[in-house]
Length: 304
Image 1: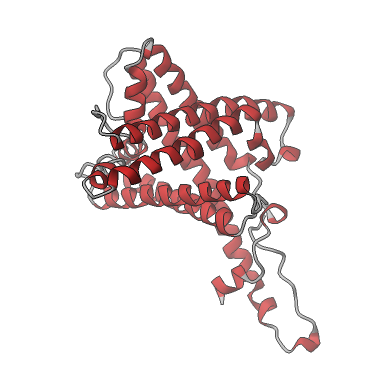
Image 2: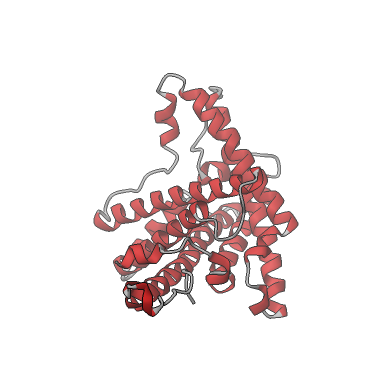
């Protein structure tokens, strides 16, 4: 399985044998990157599964703690052989961030240049930046395990301290609601994510699980992302904020609503479903030459 185009061997009269000579190295790089991307799906799944479990505990009335992907990274780091586990998390996050950049720049999934396609590719790029941020947090915690990782949404307060920061945060919030929230809800509800799965290699049971976990998990994540965007807009409008605008803040806001425990429980189960779906995407996701179609010479530039 390879991320690159099949490498062409030049004809005898071409006067160059460099592509053929670099083919084994390019294939090795390709194989490593594919494994990093698949590990990235596993890591992403774990970083949603653990917050989902923590949120479910709170919904059931048990004592809780901050609910966020960074908290999940801290929990992993405190396990036996935590440094080894964090190295695996870091490699997976790097692989998934790289996959986001590849999808955004080279468009291997053929999203195109329509408004909808460009919006999806922008979403991939935004995702890559977010996972690079988690990678930086993982490295920081691995090198300084006694320090607290902090809240991922602290940047919003710093932004509000600048002139016109409120307007910028409001625009980001509206964009987050539309791009990360409503788009995810529509994608999950309509099952659009299945176009990126290798359905031809999946059994009937796998397809059924993929459909169920994917639809419920992606819709739930979209709803939580919409709440995060709404909290950004509220902060921008100087509405009194009662917490972080990140995942933890969104789940706490859900808990404060009428029937909050039931809503939080549903959101938690949705996060768990999305986490399980992401882990299984390490097997299901279509990551192969026919789906990727990177520009020619990409891997030659890496290994030459």
